[in-house]
Length: 623
Ligand code: ASN
Image (cartoon, rainbow, N blue to C red; front, top):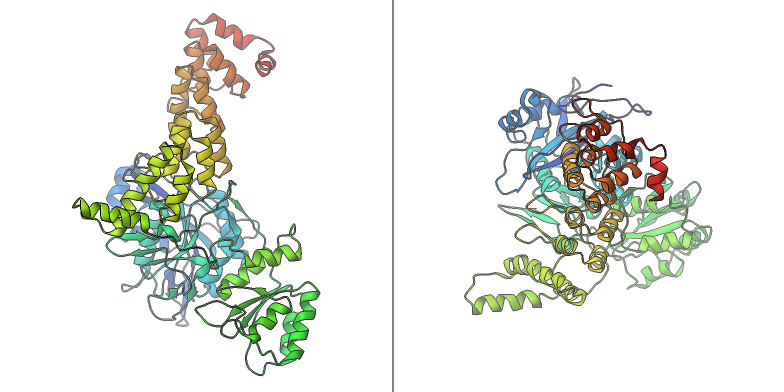
């Protein structure tokens, strides 16, 4: 089904369900960022049908956004995209307080769904699209109905493994087409977050707050503050300033690339206990094909311990390999073994769901059950483990002693600093100096005092930028294992990977790439950089780009590849390296000239011979 929404042209997929082609955005300014908006449905784009009920309207939201001055800056788009501005990417107006202008593309699904009609197939489709476009965009926003938003966010949080970029889900209580809609703020704030902050989590942006998706639940059918995360602080709040709670962010702490786990097990169920529940009801939940249930118990994880019939039935099912995950019916708090009525569950092998929401517990179960490489014991163990910040593990509360010391220092010296400003300004500086001193112990100390590796300094540089620039390989590894983000861009648009490439730290480049880092440079600009290196005959630099994932056949604005210019300037070693990496001798520049023509025109006989040597490639490999 073809739909056009600005930059989007659509191809039907195998399932016939969704769109699959998106134009990427080449950023040409350091002040811009790119966001892919996946539009799955929900009230945000609904209209009233003939029957008087709200239903999603296809091909309408994109057109409407183009006419909304608070969501699309026509003037900027005209300047930026010229004649193509009517179909170009959307441009978020200048929000003054956000650093980058957010350019975004809309990918509208077909059909659009009320989220009550969504299934795990849609979660998989969203996860696959994020995978497909992961390298092309700085962040992702998913427009979604509110009814099952918490389920989708929870499921995605598990499926998107080693996530390094912001994925923000949002929706609204009133349609964007309505004047009093909450959609405008929710959408706009989501775009600001996805385009300006690296919050490597699946989050929900709603009612001026950003929540961790798998901690969130829909609390209100009517209010604009429809969501809450009762057992976790919001990750950010939107006032005059956007206050990001950096210390609360969850980050992958392994050096592994982003990947998507696109399988979920549907043989799961939620069993909510109630007084006088019959054995037949319980038994219906424990029978095949069910493989796991979330048992919603009373209070802090209690069940009727006098119902031996039920307990024996549950125990028998567990012995057969069924997983029973215990969560509370209460909105706030955790299950525990405080009461005899709770301890009985532990005694019969029920797994503790700690303080997970039912949405998180169910989707985690569904995810864990598809990890075929794990035994049942391992699956139970992983369910109790904190995988994506979905449950609380008691860790020592970081003391603010360091920040307090800073404040007393500032008080003594008459500097006006409250503890938060002090922490925001001074911690990044102290971390930076610990990096320069190659001192992991001091970094560790600062982290336990409340510092955060993702908190940027005034130049938006993180400690990882500094370590990559200085070539501190073991510190880079150390910080990646502490969750440092590889995607943060500094004031000059440099990621840690750019720093490592610029300074030719090959081991660091490898580490970063293994942790999911990739070059975010428009192809022609990359071509210019490669040609510049080849003009200098700088093989080390070309190797740096190669390790970072660059295509060495990439041409510049004039169609010249690095091999063209290496030939032109007679850099033999460089030409040999490029040939060895499979660079093409027949690549033509804008005037139809090949590297061979360049060598001939430059009068470099040696280079022509080099190219003409029959066994050049073999020779190069040997070299
Ligand atoms: N029924 C709608 C949905 O979940 C509710 C909403 O989006 N506010 O799609």
